[in-house]
Amino acid sequence: MEKSRRKFLKNAAMACSVITIVPSHFVFAKKEAKNQKGELIRSGSVVPSEKVNLACCGIGNQGGSDINIMYNTGLCNIVALCDTDMGAAHTLNQIKKFPDVPRYRDFRRMFDEMANGIDAVLIGTPDHSHFPITMLALSLGKPVYVEKPLARTFNEIELMMKAAKKYGVVTQMGNQGHSESNYFQFKAWTEAGIIKDVTAITAHMNGGRRWHKFDVNMTRLPDSEPIPETLDWDTWLMAVQHHDYNKDFINGQWRCWYDFGMGALGDWGAHIIDTAHEFLNLGLPFEINPIKLEGHNPFFFPMASTILFRFPERDGMPPCDITWYDGVNNIPEVPEGYGVSELDPNIPPTSVGKIQPSKLNPGKIIYSKDLIFKGGSHGQTLSIIPEEKAKEMEHLLPEVPESTSNHWANFLKAVKGEEKVRSPFEVAGPLSQIFCLGVLAQKLNARLEFDRKKKIITNNRLANELLVGAPPRKGWEEFYKL
Image (cartoon, rainbow, N blue to C red; front, side, top):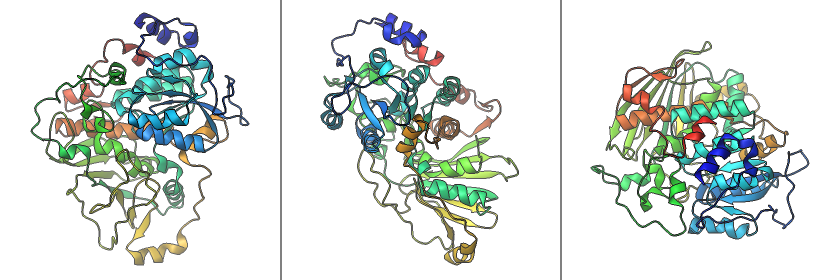
């Protein structure tokens, strides 16, 4: 089987002609894809009048939410469901909702059998598994919607950006706020000169996190436990070096560990600093400094982090610092006249439920030469503070256009050629790479100097090696060559 898969990866265009011997523990799919009405779905290119044939990788938790929203746009057919655990409670809802759709536990087999019947791919799997699925989909010319952050290592994101350019397909990262009010407001206010000469940004996410219950004195990974019968643990691991199964590695718990997830920064950074990063043309930082790491541990993320990211002068804009705060009690100072810390009721629920109000709700404070702006996360809009200054500026504020589509519809319409995606890899990639640099600083508890042109860390040899990360597990090397 591995031989045939290697042949498939090297000859992606002929994927469907490769004969494979499939172990019995895989969930076998029907040979012909059908839509929700049971009708056979025609393969081939998408035209504006047709629906997008969407394959879904990761069908529980966030992935399941994405599927529902995509389907409810009315712009797509769900033609394949893929998840490494097709018998878990969190995947059963989608299986019941789409009972006649082919199911797989291995994305490689899905593409082996169905590549010609897939127009686009939704990837809502854990952070460590984004890269292999995305690279294979791109190499087959399939547009991809990938949850944030794009991948777990700086180099994986670099390869994903290059592949997106090489194969010339539509890409979108799942930071929903990029299709909501904050995106259009930030763009309009920047173009009108309301937001200008920004020198500092405070970004904060102070809610409780899963690893806050862990023992900071942990000296090894959790003990091995029996693998659930329904779970394909080997495929779940993807390219990551072997780990014995433990329930604390799956179902959202993966976000706690450096080996699998990206912590609070990777989870929330894209919802808080995405518009500032794009419209202030920040690019990559030249310095990453973990000013405070409370409860540092080599296996999982700190109980609290304060990380300084420094960006140089660019395109006539002054140097800018972003200071990131996470941890329940690691609350940044707020300026006079800040007012109430609102929690946007439109923030979608996470895999553990709705976000609960905290001492300072997720958001940012943007300091420019003349003005201070307060904002939340996702699509929550900015306001000028203090209130007296906001009233003084009211007559100068430009009209902000409304969004023509939500983030999921924007992707599907882009696949159909009707719109341009708002968070393509060329925009979302560097943003995600900032998170990778921040996570390296957290893991090593070290200040890092970064060469923006050469894309290397110049003052820490280990950190520079970790831009690439550990070698992929045997059998997964080909994904890094696509």
